[in-house]
Amino acid sequence: MNKYLLLCLAIVIASCSYNFSGVITDPVKGVTDQLRYDDEQVSFQFFLSDSQIGFYLQNKTSKDITIDWNRATYVSFSGLSYRVIHSGVPYRLRSLPQADTVLPPHSSLVDVLIPTSYVYYSEGWKVSSFITKETIGKEFRVYLPLVINGVSTNRQFKIKVGKTI
Image (cartoon, rainbow, N blue to C red; front, side, top):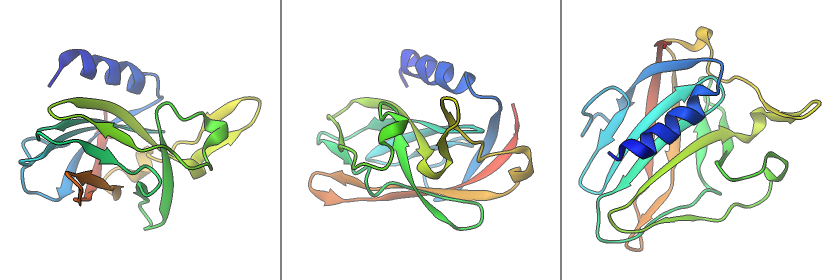
């Protein structure tokens, strides 16, 4: 994993109030450590904070990978499904359609997911905490619709929140 990309993500996540450990509980195939997932096509590393979910995605294939952000979803601890925005999307445009991200062959992406329902304006744009100390031990899901070589190969991760770090 590119250390520069991880440093960038760490800086973004460090700006949040709380950071959390965690574990991917589903799928378990390919798990090499607690918030990492690997298979023959992709590698994911997640980073949890109180107000966003950071991730590093590596394309291991010789084909483009497309992320359809308009279908990407955060499923809360109570099972409610929320539209998400990612880095680069201004908060004021959170309700508008988002352009797909194309990840070229053998490249990587550092990004964040923010559920749009937690973004609000009150003397400036803010994001409410959705991962809190009260959610430690509980699970949420991240759904990322991916297209690899023209084939839909969606990824859904169930993540259990760990202690604050």
